[in-house]
Length: 456
Image (cartoon, rainbow, N blue to C red; front, side, top):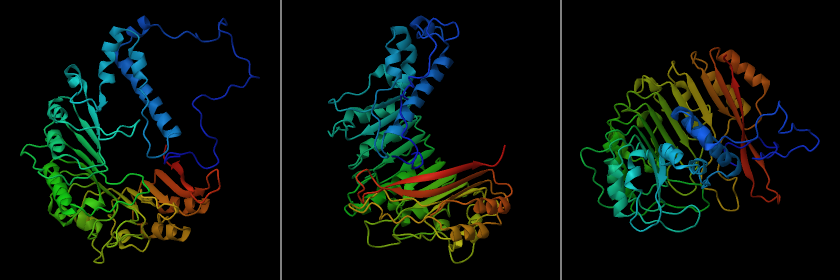
């Protein structure tokens, strides 16, 4: 059950609810019953493109629902899109649906083949892998693929899911895609030799995500070629820093070289997974981000290293008492994970902050035989009250999230309502544990969350 799971004790959702045989149903001949016959292809062809687009979006939403409710967190859905059968109705409809069918594509293992050139102008998103989803077989990343990527005129997003070293040629090819706006690198290993970006690289890129870890019970210590990898990461960041607006990066990949990069237009910055080594305070990391509006420091426990600040609580503030607004005057939203109310960060919050979110994130590495040993740190009721008191100067606070180690009480909600009169959205989370069917110790965790909208 994934992070979007229903609260513990709720009935398991089904795609096709069982019918109650005692309930009578109108017959197809009844004038009050809707037609049971599907629309013909001729009727569909009369629809304008905007209506077809809405239908396709709805079909994607159905696929997404299946993924959320029936797949475990970390697993992927490889079902054929529902748009494909619809497109087989007739040639005319298939031609009209081509922009929806080919807007998102992936690579496959067929020698040097790539997508047909007639579809290149339709491709908006590419997912590149080195392993197949359905079968554990490798996919070779070949020269024809590298040559094609810069020639996709409508490509705006690329996702790399590669658990081995990412080829330098692949990154260089993507840097030349003329409309690429978003790049996401999952399970990143950026330690290939020969990485050197042209002067004109990533001209349209505004969003970059680089993550290292996936859900695993195998402890991978990143030691080999780590210096080369950190150097390559800095080369990539330097090539995108002038135009980038949103950066999400694993703390495993942040080095002292990161601190020298200027981010003139960056508005959203998130550090996830493990802490950098050596450790840097939040203010140090954002010292060259004058336009920053959203800051997320979402560290988790690190059970794979032996040096640095590895386990909660993590320290986000500094001892000099200087506020974050000194380096980030536009900061309006802050997200922290696995912290304690004594952290000096709570006395350094900008007075104009409108969003404050406290989480207890778990590490993606699950120790074998002891899945609970992920050392997340939710707030106790006393801790929550202390955080509210220390943040009471935030008179403009409109959005608040607290992750607690016990069920939230009405008294806590009353305190929040009094402390923050302008609050519009409140989210209270509680990590809940339950045993598997065999009552084994390999328990799973479910996050039960309460969402309260306080404004009309």
